[in-house]
Image (tube, rainbow, N blue to C red):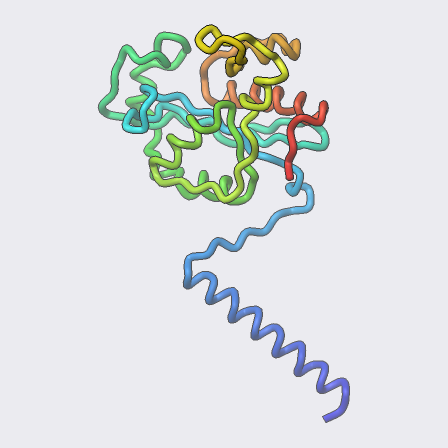
Length: 216
């Protein structure tokens, strides 16, 4: 066998090995994800609206945007009202936003968007303002987050330095609205998931520009 023929055989063997590994990965239900170069420096910012503070309470709305950490551009990716049958019609979310009980009754079944959401969570590094709350709720209904980024609420605590009413000598966690005012982002938080996610992404962009939010 000449050198050229040997090279062809080697490439064929490599191809077969790669294909075998991919098939095995699929059989083990391992997600094989391909990222465009332009997506590598993008992150997903999530916001949810719920019927209460506990994971047993229903999720009313899920919103998410993609923030380009190089340019600061923000693209809406998710804006869903989640269908619920049993919930408190006097919930805080209904009292402080344009969301209504009727909209929740007519929302989308979360199972119909599960694959789409999970794929986004697999592809992008994820964060949320008060990450433990939003991510905790989504984890409680079965979503996984392979790559979590720092919580901008925690980061801004030592930047805004707002004294805690309950813990003298300490700083309180700032609200989204307090951060918007600090960074002179002239918008009010509407308490709707996708719109809030956009505002929170703008806060994160300010943290990125100042070097206070680390992607890696």
